Each structure stands twice: as structure tokens, then as C-alpha cells.
Length: 236
Ligand SMILES: O=C(O)CCC(=O)C(=O)O
Image (cartoon, rainbow, N blue to C red; front, side):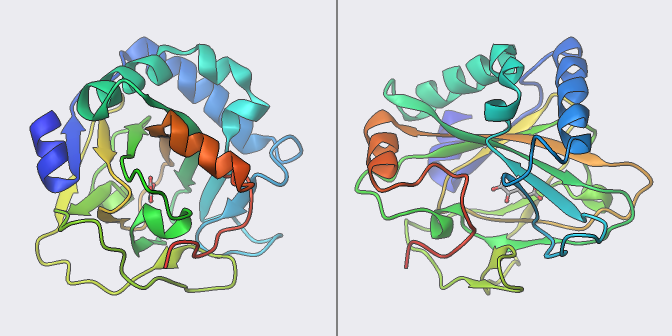
């Protein structure tokens, strides 16, 4: 996995966490999805919907600030172990997020590189662990990746004001990664990725943990970046 991650900028792990842990996470996850009061300010529709309409792609930033029990689950520890193994002992959790695709919302997450959302950092190591809490496949929005080609960032734009960033890319080499619940992918900040909309009868729940070097987290915090704020292009 380490070799593939370092070569392509992404890799998959068929099982990160046991089914019992998937069950625990689903309970906490669904409570957060339903609780619009406690998640206010951290929650938005990545699919560009406005307040009042059905959320197509619910994104909740830093869910463990609202529900600290998440940090007691073994997912965070297991993901960090893999990331340290791939990128070094100084890697730490920067932020977590939930991204849920509601049934029959059919809204893709557009092609983008996560680093476009982040400030410029001298140490470019990062890994996002995308944990599937449902079985994921093309029709409900599993992840697709394009093997990365260096650390350049393509120009990114918003589709809608405050909505997801996207960039133009040739997706001919894109690889689709279906997963069972409890499986995960790791991708770095420069790896292009996307997911199709959810056209099925059930939700597509993912918990995403982002890791980077401790010193870079400090740099972000000094610049006021804690991943609770607006979505915008920060890294041009
Ligand atoms: O869950 C998705 O559809 C997109 C996830 C994503 O863009 C990310 O984890 O960086």
C-alpha cells in the first residue's frame, strides 16, 4: 500500500476497521446528520444546495468537535498508524469531516485536488483516509482517482458560490475504487479525485480523516486555518 500511495498518490485498503466499529460509527454519524442545531456552522451542502432545500451532499467539518466520542473509536488510531507508516512519525490528525450523499440526489463531487482548498505549505506531505460506512460503488458515489503527476495544482473554480471547487481534467486514466463497509482509501492533497452522484435508494456515508505533519498543522493554525471556515481557493 505504501509503494502504491507514494507512486500514484492514492491506495486502497479493503478493511481498515471491523464491522463492530462500522456499526458504532454509523450510530454517531446518523445522530450528527440529523442534528442540524449542533452542527450549525460546520455543515453545508457540497452539492451547492441552499438552506431549505434537501441537502444533496452533506458535508460536516470537524464532527469530532461536536461529538468527541468519535475520537474514542479505533478508526482514528488505525488510520494514523497507516499514515505514519506511509509518510513518517510526525504525521497527526489535522481535521475530520463527514460527507454523506443522500439517496436519489445524483450530484457528483467534481474533480478536484484537496490542496487547492489549503494554504501553501513548505512540507507537502498529507493523507486523507476516506472510510466507507456503506458499501460504495459507481452508482452511489465511490471514489475515483487519477494517478498523480507531481505536486502541481491545477486552476480550481467554484460551480456555485461557496460550493465545491472543481478543475478541468482528462479522466481517461481514472480508477474507480468500490469498497465494502469498513474499507478505505488514502489519497494525498495533490491527487485528483471525484465521485459520481448517488442514484440508489440508500445513503452513502463516508468519514474522512486528514493527516499532515505536526509542524504544518501548527503553521495552518497560526494563519487561522482550522478547517471550520468557508470553502475557497487558497493555494494558487
Ligand atoms: O466523498 C466524496 O464524494 C468526496 C470526498 C473528497 O473529495 C475528499 O475526501 O477529499
